Image 1 (tube, rainbow, N blue to C red):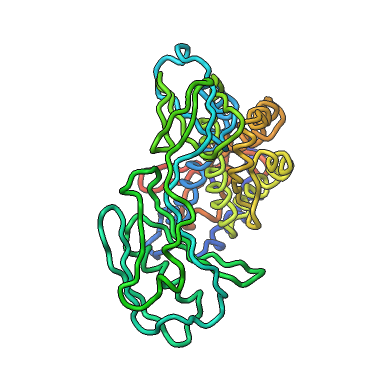
Image 2 (cartoon, rainbow, N blue to C red):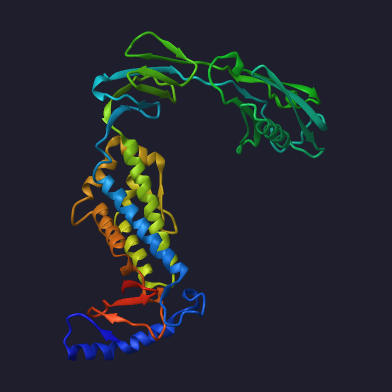
Length: 421
């Protein structure tokens, strides 16, 4: 072993004696996993798995660091036009000058909807009493007639036939959504057919009729429960307006998408653009999970396992606060997002508050996890154990540290790999 650094000869001899056996043991410990071939004489090499692991944690930690910096920096600074009730109406601003747009209010009396047919409520498990064999039925929509068929077996239940009709309709690509709804308490099922196209246009109407057999009549598939309709709304207390779409242009680069009718007006005002913040949260979660998966999945490496443990310690300390903003952890330790809670936290300011409170230099979730991510990104080799590296007995090693901090210089094919462990 060749000693390098600022050690005097006596101390150097001592370290040579102490670590020579450790190096020999390291060479003997190398597993076949990291030596895919025997052609390694006089060379050093990372296994494919080792290189992949190093690349994975470096990339994931860098992405995690960037996401955390955005969440504690620019994520909450962008302004746009926002809705006071996103469950009723969402808003999109595509204009160039936000200052030129005035606040407004929108009253939504009715949203645009498509035709809905709800069939007869039948005993789900009762034997179907309609015609057996091949049943053909026609579906008329958009001025076009399409014939579909199902095969009814002797032992089919009402729900079986309803499901066969729903499958035939969905597979035909007619712009209709067919489902079978079952009441678990009463064991009653119903065929439900809805147009994907909204608005009162005649082209959005549809009807069903039997051609051979009586499946339509037996299931009540042509019974209309809701006619197609336009959206009805008003802006700033003005007269009622109609729209065949639920997305309307309100002018000056502001468009609104109606989601539900409401007795209360929905305000549109200048506010924070939460899309950027929520995107940064999604990036943070993805990067965290990638880093954790790489570390936790590298079972044979104690330093990788140590990294996974440190991540769990950081996130575990803030699990309750994270849950409040919609970030939880599954049984495997990965982050998951509750979109509803995240949206609520973004709207009520809790999301921004959490990252502002936890971004201090020496404390907080964002600060602590950010320091760890930066450390992994800039000192990646500190999180990999020596067993991840291949070596032969004839390699040239250089020691330049104290205690358990050892730096090996691996001389291989003209390259030098500095590795800290």
